[in-house]
Structures are given as structure tokens and as C-alpha cells.
Amino acid sequence: MLHVTKSFLPDLKEYVKYLEKIWDSHHLTNDGPFVKELEYKLGEFLEVENFIFVSNGTIALQLAIKGLDLKGNVLTTPFSYCATTNVLIWEGCKPIFVDIDPISLTVNSQQIKSLTELNSISGILTTHVYGNCGDLEEQEIISNQLGIPLIYDGAHAFGVKYRGKSIFNYGTVSTCSFHATKVFHTIEGGAVMTNDHKLAEKIRGIRSFGHKNDDYFDIGINGKNSEFHAAMGLVNFDNFSTIKKHREISSSIYDTLLKDPIIKYKYNSELDRNFSYYPIMFTSEDLLLQVTEKLNNYQIYPRRYFYPSLNNLPTVTGNVCLNSEDISKRILCLPLSADITEGDITKISTIIMSSL
Ligand SMILES: Cc1ncc(COP(=O)(O)O)c(C=O)c1O
Figure (cartoon, rainbow, N blue to C red):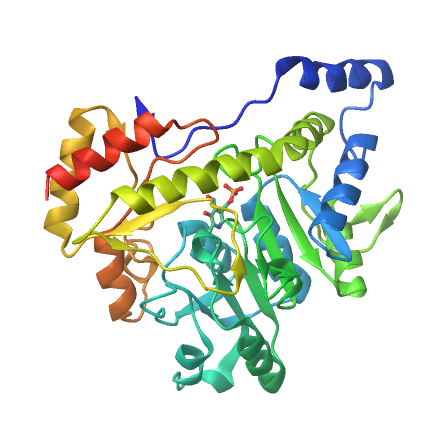
């Protein structure tokens, strides 16, 4: 059975070494030594001045929205996981969907400029979908001109660089998810990253209930993560470059075997990728459904990621976004993992090509 993703598990002995230290210290959570070590190492690796480890990628977004005090209308992408929209609504904001660029599938500066409601916007929250990105510098210019913060949901973008610089250095705040299905994971986990020290201090405070000892300074939440999760992160981080290499090779095998009429997803040429997903597009939804059924017959389970377009979620009242609605019906993520074999990829590709 092959699923769209398979969580990486490190050598158990490596993890147990950390568990033994946790047993010795009896420090299970609340800013323990492994959380601090992980924050230091990932902050360095991702080239950000403030790296705040949190319990998941959803709470990371909530903390960013709360930290920036976003209210009212927020521009956002319709092509992402539902968490990107949900957090806005959960935090009392109104998502205003900006349609995506049909190539990058991200929101670009041109799409933002075309909006008429720009005066009423309090912030922008978009996604580096599949670890890809659009014109980040131009988006920063718009956010500066409008005087509003720019949040990037970088759940898929661990380790990605754009124009030689960590992608998490763009925008006011970036978040990441370290969920078990991600290219780097801590089982459950996530991060908020920013180079704004004042904002980072506020987010650190509200991550931990909004109080320090007897000083209650804000209305916070529990967004902390534990020593067990941090330990998994430390072990997995040691394996990240090997995992990334394997995924890169696997992606290039797909590239070779999949041909017309499969439409391959194009990444920004100035990107140092992390190979987190392998999305393909079909010429029609019917074809996507036909191929999916055939793959399912062989116990291969790709995923309609992302479907439906978020502006069409039954729980959301969203404005029309034609590109996103069209593409979300025709896009499918194929299995990709740290141990997928060349044989698996050949089998998947052969089934796809023979069913077209
Ligand atoms: C784009 C995007 N944003 C946010 C999230 C939420 O992350 P988490 O599952 O860590 O809460 C996900 C999870 O898959 C995601 O894909």
C-alpha cells in the first residue's frame, strides 16, 4: 500500500538516547533543554533571528495573527490547506480570497494589486504552496506601501531558499508545520519565525498563556511543545539532507517517466527546493478521477491536495477565484517519501500513463 506520504522514522536507538536523557532530567515540557537546542539549531539553519517552536503549524498561524493583532479583512490564498483559512475565521478576521497565479499556484503581487478592496485590508496571509513561491520581493513592497503585515504560511517550505536566502526571511512573519507527514517533522509541531524582535517577544509570551510567574501581561494560549517532540526533531534534523536527497532523486524519476498529457508543476527557477510534494495536473477532473480510481485498485493512494478551492469550502463564504477553482479540480499529489523506491515510482507512473 502506498499513500501520498509516509512519515519518516529515524533509527529507534538514536531516539532512545534522547529519551534516556529526558528520564534523567525529568524535564518533560515547558522550555526544556531539547526545545532550546532545537530552537537554536533550526534558527541557525533557517537563517532567522527568532525561531519559536510551537505545538503545531495551525497554532503557529494563530499566534502570528494574534501577535500582529490582525482584525477585519485579511487577503489570503484560496489554494492551500483549510488551516490557512480556518485560522483567520477562528481569530475573528474575514478572509478575502485573492486568486492564484496559474503557474506558481501562489498569490503574486499582480493578483494583489488587482484587488479593489485594498484600503480595507489589515494584513496578508498566503502560502508557499508545495514549498514554491511567487515574487516575494514585490509582495514585500506592496505590504510596505500599504503599511500592513505579510504572513507566509510556510508549512511546506522547510529548508527552501529563494534567491540564495532562506524563504523564511521574507515577509513580516513566517510559519512552518512539523507534522509527521512533512519533509521534516517533530511528530506534531510547528514554528513561528520573524526577524522582528519585539513581535517575537510578544509571540513567545502568548505561546505560554501570556504570563511569566506572577506577571500576567496578555491573554495567551498554550502553544508550547514538549521535550519528546523536540527530541524527535533533533534526530530527524540530522537525517534531513539524506531525506531531501532521496526525495530529489525520486522526483526526478517521476519527471522522466511522466509525459504528456500530464502537466507537470513548475517551481520557481530561483528556488533551492525541498522536494516536499510531487503534484501533477490533468487536463480535466474526469481524467483525474479515472486515474485515481485505477491507482486505488493497486492500493496506491495519491491525494487531491488541495481540493476544494478554499473559497468554496462549505464552511466559508468566499468570493470567486477562477484559477484556484479550476486547478484544484485537476491537481493530484503523488506518493513521495523518504523511502519510496524506484520500483514504486515506476509502477505508479506506468499505471498513470497507461490509463490516459
Ligand atoms: C499549508 C498548510 N498550512 C497549515 C497546516 C497546518 O499544520 P499542522 O498540521 O501542523 O497544524 C498545514 C498542514 O498540513 C498545511 O499544509
